[in-house]
Image (cartoon, rainbow, N blue to C red; front, top):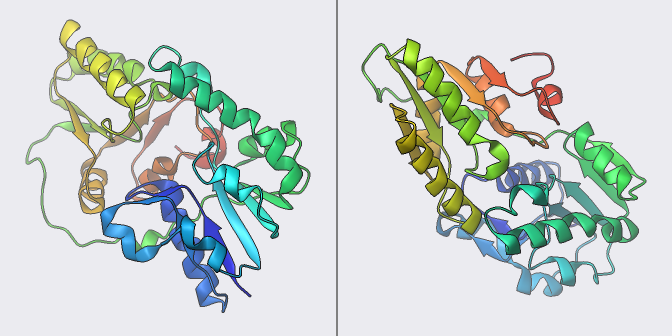
Length: 294
């Protein structure tokens, strides 16, 4: 039996792409033929995928489609007459993008509206959280199972003796997209207050801010806020390697996020894996992901 996965892009470090790789590994280890088809891929992952343009040459028995919004695959995929399973990774509400980029806001709004159509053509759906399951129910999906994002934590066990900072500062860490829904401005103001009382503290913000228009504009506004309010000891890393990410987790004393919308939030699990205390808003899927921890 051949079970193939489809997603628009496999980007290095992205949670959805990482899960697709884990699922393929599990399928192959259990005797299934399985490949991943994409439109876009990071250079260092080219050998892990096939391009969607080749998909029609393949005889799939089942398709697993990772959906987090409309993409270049969407219109072609809905026409394929093969049994389909949708994995829903959530869609950021469009209201968070209106201020920064209207085309992105419009596309995001359409992405959510498309769920109602997808409910009619997919045989089964997987939600990575109960929060996401409720969104699928509201969109008309019937057959839904909740399966949290699969993470291969073995790869996190990287021996590394490199010490990033040799001091006694308290290191607060945020990991995630630099996106308006993450409310990083709230995080900055919270740190400003904390740093006033503890000068030996730093805030490290790990995440890509150069890929999308909203992220670039949002990052510019965050830097302006830092300058205008004279916040010290804040460091934006930009996009980093997986090895560097592990170093930051090992360095951190506290993981903190003020995000206003999460369908799962993988960095919460990563932080707990490294034994880092977590501070987060009690909203959306965050309490479910933490499972009473934090």
